[in-house]
Image 1 (cartoon, rainbow, N blue to C red):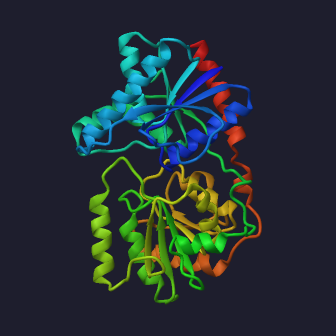
Image 2 (cartoon, helix red, strand yellow):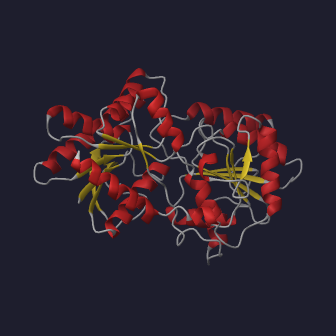
Image 3 (cartoon, one colour):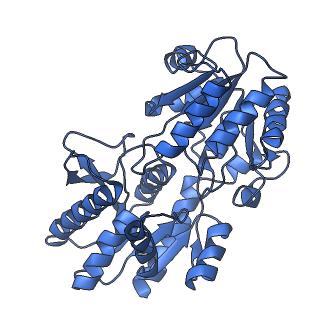
Length: 379
């Protein structure tokens, strides 16, 4: 089959990782895969891919968030329109509202017959236009997929949509517990202090990541581990997270915490893709007490790296993790998060990826998509 996978960004977000790794696995199954992503001139995907890539041209002019999203939808639609003038895809598959709206426009014009939409999670926006775009991208899809039972059930309840379940995966060659040459240099370059226990968060400072409560939990945990350092890696996003970032800085300042490389709290900003496995290996615990997640891929990657993970005691984490795989915490209670962080650090590192990592592979995800794509073609 000829498959087009659409993603909203070139940056290291969970949904973008899913597209890249799914594309690689589908390619290995013999499919022709094209990845389509919006990008400014000279920009490229954060991770190399063997798949063909088409970039939808963006300008770099600043604008309000709704206008930035509109530009991305327009750019994706224009790129798809040009591609479809001289080639045909068996499956057009969007993984977010930006690609979904571009495809919905093409359905409305009669250019394509339908599209597939994967829902990682449903965003809720204060801006009515953004919310309308998010919901339209789901409602207008001919086939909807979800990466967790939580979101499959919410789509059934809120939209009357019968979505199909697909899996995420973890690359056990990329994420492994054995130290690699250069790990210490990578950790130091990203602000991790040598000789201090490290709590690592991934994905930047965001409200849905529960970043302020994580910071409060970190401060509580320092009562038991005074040398503890909090490092939050990543953070490139199309959306505006300035309110949570401001609250994070105000909370840190009120507590007298020092921020910066090697300090009590380090915000790395976007990190090089090749650096993430080393950061996961160097960390003493991954903290992911999120309020909203599609799957929680970073926790799986941490476990594959031999690093214990603290996750929220809510779905979707409770769907695929069991006690013994991770340390669960109530995401609304900083004290509970802190106790889980200390327990995870006390537990130490693992010498091998646990069974839950072996149960989630990108090759299995590609096989599942293969079956669903053929159902889509028949329909």
